[in-house]
Length: 457
Image (cartoon, rainbow, N blue to C red; front, side, top):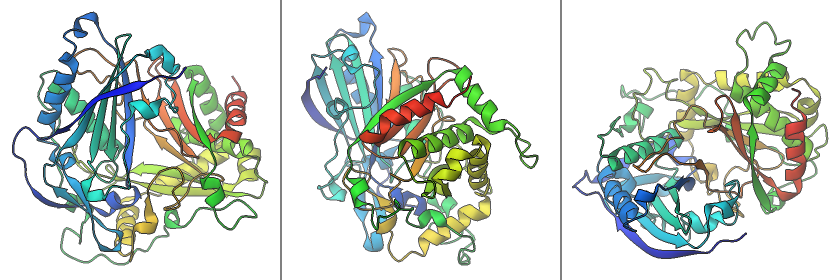
């Protein structure tokens, strides 16, 4: 069932007190990969006492957003494009956008809350034809439904914050809305990621490690470019796994595990292997089809010393592992899990330093930046025959309480990227998982079939 959403107004929210102004340099990790906005959405069923007065919730969100922008002042700034594809963050307190909207529809009209075309009305849209220095880094939309439900959707520029940083901001905003103090103060010192030079002032040597994650991923056999695949229509599914199903997959992955891998494969290593294999089968690849899996790794704990809690920016980056579709489909699951573990464990302190230095030495970063919009021809493409699987398993994504209780659903707000997969903990059952998967429409039904059939309980 389609819903209609009416905008009640768009407001520019600025920090309620004076904040630091000036140019904040961005790290190398801020300026590659997805540099556009990433939407997240929360749905709430409001208690009766929160339904009146009608503007109570909006006023609380508006006031607390203005307060939280004081410590999180970079979000109220604007990006500026420099030469060679570089970016700079101008902390100028221009503010964020807060959109008020309402719908005659109900939360039940949204079914299982899987991102769909309906979400385009309840997630803030960003017009990327607007010059980048005019675009807000954070947009928020509050949509009230006639049933007493509420959708709170945010979209945050990935050039300013990665997943852990965005989650940190959301949780601190909720704390201030409840009248509590900040839990962890954010800090923005990019020197911890060697902006410009090594902290000691000594120039780092050239990268001495291979960085295949910056190479163009494989194309479908017989193709010389990926434009046709980029333009294919896509869809998204939310696939739920019980704790029993997750344990069954982990058991399969760890069956006859090699003695050089004494530690059992993790949920992520197991799920990413399963997703990759199912995608190869659903896409009907030839056995010799090359394919890569893109893995997002958090460098915070890999640095020496590790980053202190509260670092706000990007400290995650991608690594890849490769194989052929036939190898993935016909080998035991443990073989694919082993590939994934190998790629993750290769991300040492030296690897992180080498990655940053590799990026710094690039003459132009444009080719490494993903506008992440359907139809975009820029950036690396991890759609067919490739895949990206991001883990939110260790992030505090649930229990966002602004004073009226926790959400009934939280998930991604976008739905149109082939090969984009996200693994989340289940909010219904401890040990269960939810996989948000985006694929070409022609591949989705087969993927779902293999996804569940290949779990032997």
